[in-house]
Length: 187
Image 1: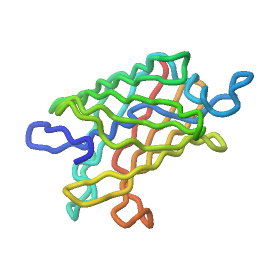
Image 2: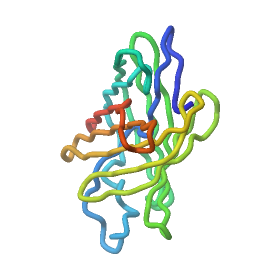
Image 3: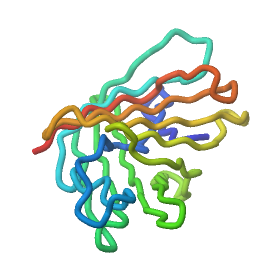
Image 4: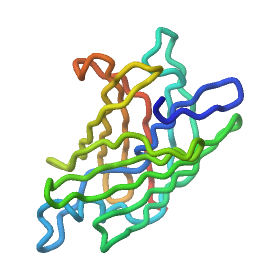
C-alpha cells in the first residue's frame, strides 16, 4: 500500500512524494538545459501545510486531514540528486518521510522515490520532469492490493511558495483523485 501511516483511529495516506516538496523549475544554469538542475530553486528549508485524503479511492465520503511542519531539501552529487525530509504533525499524529530524487542523464528525467520510514522499504518511483513550468511525474503502484497509476505535480507559485499534489488513478489514467496537497513557503 502506498505511503500509509497509522494515526490513532485513522489510516493516513502519506503521499510524500513529495513530498513533499516539489515545484516548477527556475531557469537552468548555463550548460544544464537538459534538466539536471530543475530542483535547484527548492534547496533549503520550507514551512509546509499538508492536506491528506484519509481514505483514497474509496466509496467513503472525502475526509481531509491537515498537518503542518517543515520540509528540508538538501542537494547531493553536485545537485544531480537531492533528498527531501518531511516532518509534519497535527493533534492526532504525525507524518515523517524522506523522498530521494535522482537525475537520469541518459533519459533526461528525474526519478522520485519515497522512503517509507514505517516499514523501511522504498516505494515504486515516479518519473518525469518539468515542462512549461510544471513538474509532472508518473508511475505505477498498488493500493489495497489493486494496481493504480500515480501522478505527482509540482507548481512553483512564486520565489517563496510551491504547491505539490499527488493523485491516484484506478483506471489507467482516465480519471484521477487527488489525495495529497502540500503548500510550502520558504523560511
